[in-house]
Image: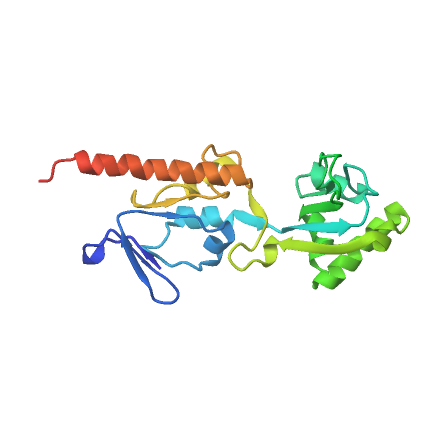
Length: 239
């Protein structure tokens, strides 16, 4: 729970799942949008109806990244499939294979041959529904073999999967909104100026949601806000 009711002469009290308590003057909440939507954190007092409606009109899109290592580079710098064009054009998904080792020094005695795959939204669904890492590997190699005459399977060595949707404390790749600027403004609004929010879901400029730099900048903005408020608290004479 995050209790900012001011009871017990404590401005903010955070109680973890294991029962640990942390009392503070202010707190920054940086959990993912899906964690807020799922109600994993109990806020006291609870969210306003306006904030709850904003959460209902927002969602986390599914997505993953996969890195595959091969014994040779048989693929171009980047490529995709025509089946994903419509999803990209309508904003419902994105998909790209890319050479993760591109621009690696030609003088390297043992160059890497690593192909990356990035997929979000509806474009990620065929990969996510494979269920296991082994089935996902076979699915990816099969589609690459169709493009490159079986060279993917013949030269495959290993893969690493980053499935954001399956991460228990993330549950999605990035945030999406029906009306981003309005909803971001509502969701990023502090609670009584003592509980602030940050993360990719609430970018500092209201635009770069879904990006790592947007998350970092929002954290910086929240921290600066706390510093400003703290200085203001210290400069205010006590009655």
